[in-house]
Image 1 (tube, rainbow, N blue to C red):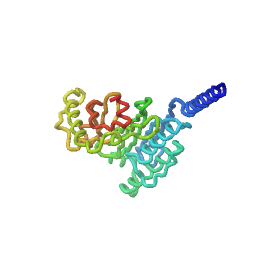
Image 2 (tube, one colour; image 1 turned 90 degrees about the horizontal axis):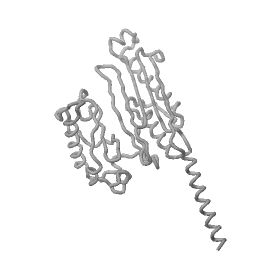
Image 3 (spheres, rainbow, N blue to C red; image 1 turned 90 degrees about the vertical axis):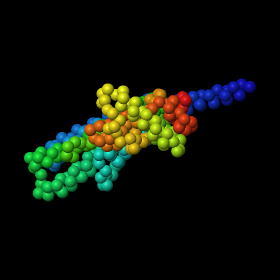
Image 4 (cartoon, rainbow, N blue to C red; image 1 turned 180 degrees about the vertical axis):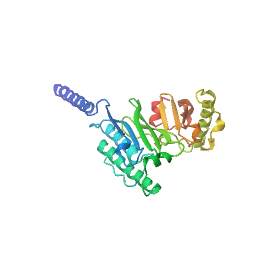
Amino acid sequence: MKKHILLFLLILMALASCRHNVEVTCPELAWDTLTHLYQQEDYTVPGISYQINVVLPKDSLCPTYTAIRQQLLDRLFGTSIAWEPDSLKLDLADAHKCLATYLKANQKALDKVVAEYAPDGVGEAQMATASLFWGNELKLSPVMVDDTFITFALFYYNYIGGVHGIYGTYYLTFNAQTGEQVHDKDFFLPNTEEALDSLLQTALMHYCEHNDEVALSSNYFETQYLHTNDNFRLTPDSIYYTFNVYEIASYPVGCHTFGFSAQEAKPYLNQQSIVYQYWKL
C-alpha cells in the first residue's frame, strides 16, 4: 500500500513539474517596439519620408508568441498593403533585418517610378510642382489581449502624389493558445452569407442614424458591396467590421466601423468554434 501511495505522489510531482516547465517557457506576453522614421535626406528622391511604428510579441520559447510574431511580420512587410515589390525577400527571424529589406525594396520601387516620370532627374522645385512629396506610414499595435484572443490593428497611410493619400486599418486576430490567425469563415457556418449581409445592412442603418460624429445618411453608401470582409474586431458580446475607403463608399465618406451582437450572430455560428465558446452562447 505504501508503495502505491509513493508511486502516486511521484506521479503528481512529475505532473506538477511538467506544468511548471510549460509556464516557464510561456511567460506573460512581453512586447518589442520597433520605430523607424526616415526623412528625405536619407533618400535620392526629394520629399520622401517613411514612418514605421511596430509593436510585436517578443520572441520566446513559447510557440504561440513566435507564430503570432512571424505572421505579423509577414503581413506587415512581406505582403504590405502599401507596397508589393516582387524582389522583396524577408528573413522573418530578425525583425530589424526584415524592416531594412522592406525599406530598401520600397526605395528601389520609388526610384523606378521617378525615373519614368523624369528621365533627366527631378529637382526639389519640380517635385513640389508635381505634388510628389511621397510618404509611407505603417503602424501596428495590439488593441486587445486576453486569454482567448490577441488582436492587432494595422494602420497604413500611403501618399504618392495627387489629391490625397490612401489610408485604412486592418484588424488581425489570433488564437492566444495556438497562435493561429482567426478568420470569420472559421466561425460562421457555410451558406450564411446572405443572412450576414442582412445583419450588416441593419447595422449600417443603425450606425448612420445614431452616429452624430459623421451624421451620414445610408444614401452615401454603395450597399451592394457590403459583405463580411474578414476585417473584424471582437468584443465579449459583439463583432465589429471595419470598411476602409473605397470599399463601400467614395473617398470623402471615409472609413467606418459597425457590427452586430453575439446574440444576433448566434444562429449563423459554428457551435464548435472558438468564438462561440468565447461568447458563452
